[in-house]
Length: 100
Image (cartoon, rainbow, N blue to C red; front, side):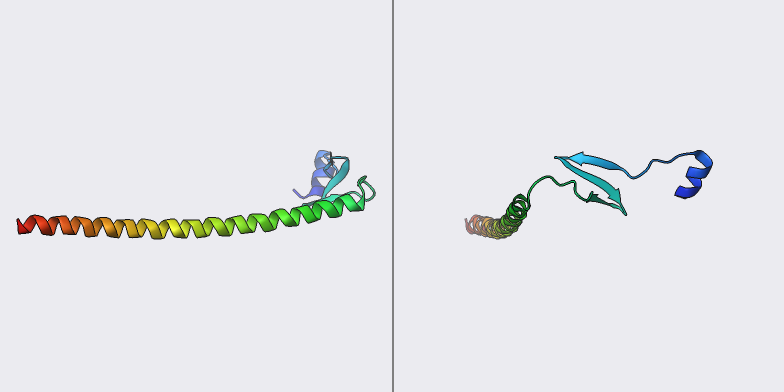
């Protein structure tokens, strides 16, 4: 049933979901939480500071992801080299056993 039919037939009217988070009133409209106008009690400088900090953290996170990728590549390369060396060593052992 669509919303208007439910309201008429079942008498259900829930209204728009709202919540209060850190002094800011939010309402759920069109699939997103939006601030109710005039509900933000903080100042613009604090908002700018938080946005800047968020940007810094996102950049740091991207750098750390890149470093992890590089370390994983290095680990893969070292592991492959180690397996090759083990195989060469095993081949040399087998070759020397055949000579005896």
